[in-house]
Figure 1 (cartoon, rainbow, N blue to C red):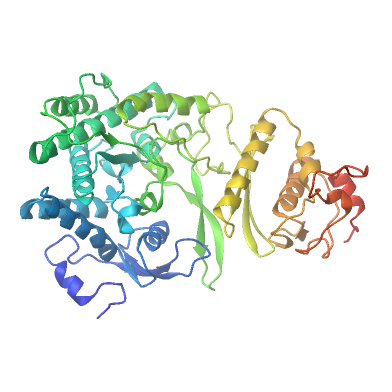
Figure 2 (figure 1 turned 180 degrees about the horizontal axis):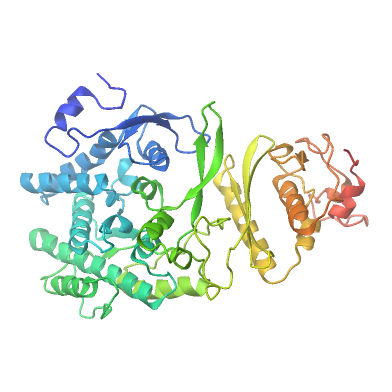
Length: 527
């Protein structure tokens, strides 16, 4: 018998006496992405909509999914493989299972998406802000134990065969905001290095304990990276040194490598982590797709978790804590943590700049590319939802643009992200916006057609056409750009010869360059 929340009656009996026993669950419908068919999911009532969407992505099949049911599927595989390999006895299996459930319920850690999907080659991620204590400290003992649990789970899941494991952490930016440390500061880098050192020491100490039981494969390192002598987090430097010393005292290690950061996936969203690894904070607000009472959906800007943490713990420093950082600051952070990792940290994914900061702006002595103002516009072009975000300097000059598209494939979205990044770099180097308007207004490709949500631009021949004509209106005061006709916006419209790219590298007759000025000659001015 299957219940509405996805748990069967036998499953509920199996959970008696565990942390799942008596857990209240909220049932709702969620989808892994805006185009997927929503399905019932059940998770704790206080978990947000992004966690429900993440659970829908992680739980296999299309039937109703619950957090206990989906989590127990991979926890059972961990225990079965651990018993078979000789790593886990019955008492150890029970302790590991309850530890993994506790990490997940407190949103402190979880196995990676591969484990949820049934795979054995996976990673284990720890959500750093979840280890913050109410008064603003960091649970050092709980974090070290979580590192050991993660290594034990990964070793068991591999059946004792893996020589390289992937334990990592996420949302360093959220932790720094909670601790009141600006990302681009020596104190933040010392804290990050201390966290990385503690993670490596705790992980290698557990690898040594496993080696004492199953046999060592690797010698203990003779040279160790030096952890920071002091950090702003009380006890962190001493805990990192003690963990590394405990690892050095092991007779040998079971693994060649243990600590590796990764780009975020649905597991980070389930845990509530907003960034992967050591990436900086994306801003003070984030776009969320919300459902209205009439069944329609719309995008809304809500505060990020980092902003809420900073506001609660450091209300007078929110702007400085969430100020944008330069590439030099990112490089400095990577250099601070890299000595303790067994693999180079991935480059952070470029995130759209969030406009209209919810928190107070940073002081003028902060980073030069400050986002004092901007806009976030949500429209529909040809039935496809599009968000255009801009960022400006103190004088209102456009500095950055970013796009969010809900229906397009990953390749198309990646191209649009790269395109927006290239335009932003050009704007910051002094390329006039008018040049971009001349180059990209009236370009033709799908989606195209009717524009909903922008009364000034009722039709567009492409997303770029709408975006750059809107930028021309907002930043250049251009009202001389005519609207394309309905025929111009049809999906099979071919336009004039000047708008066509040659299919073969043949010599073509001379013709005017395809520019908005030339394209406008082919358009009828309509009211």
